Length: 358
Image 1: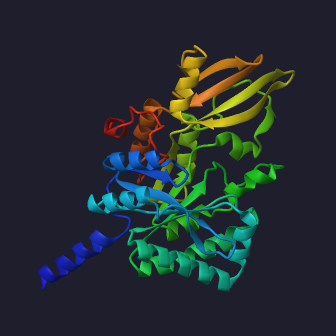
Image 2: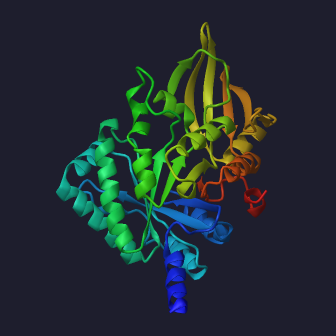
Image 3: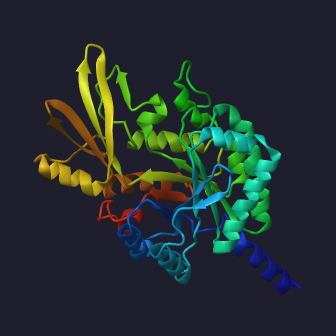
């Protein structure tokens, strides 16, 4: 009798979604990457505890739209991951807040959408799904919580993992007169998501947009750091999330890409304009083209400045050293792990298992 009980107990432990490795390192691979990028990710997949192929979006009828699964390079990616027993948690990306609101507001639409999600999970025979519904209305907070609760019930009935990817914040409420576009970070009920989702991924990047909601802005300080994913802000994002999300469910999403900004001094500080996102590969090439040395801010993030048409620009880079520094801190906090956005061969080529295990 004791042996039977022990076997049942072991079985329950083995299939519980939140019993992955003590500190996992996962990565997204996006459908808009080139076929060579997907092939690169396939070659490097054994570096990661799990992977999220970002291959789904949502149609106007709330159906799941396949953006890449049927392509040869993605077929190979899925096959190799299963062959190597690497868990796959595909991501559904949706950023149309009006369509999201319509779906959330209708019990019929929610049920139809949940059925569509379960159908894809079963069809692909993967471990679960990642819900990355961004830029939601703050006023849809309760409706989104209801949707996630309903989806969690269905996913868990099938013994599937539900992961929720959300925007970062460090306060319970937005500041007075906060720009409307920044309110999306408060559309997520951290406490409910931490209860219903098996894992919650908090995206600790794009700091400038989360606080300003625009790609052009003015600020009173002349600080060039803190625009994207600096170390101190990453710590603050993590510490805040841990107030509501259990440690064994929290994953912090870290970027492998950087940004280029134009900036000008003003009487009251500086004005900034985002020029573009930049891969690590392209940023290094630009530094070489401009004959500029890559430096580090005090927090560890790489950067360099140069002029174009007489106007100053700053380029921010995310390399293996700042990733490793963040991971050391996150391990000390005892969270479930990190997720890199994204891998495709244009990130720092020095990123390796050593980066994750310092």
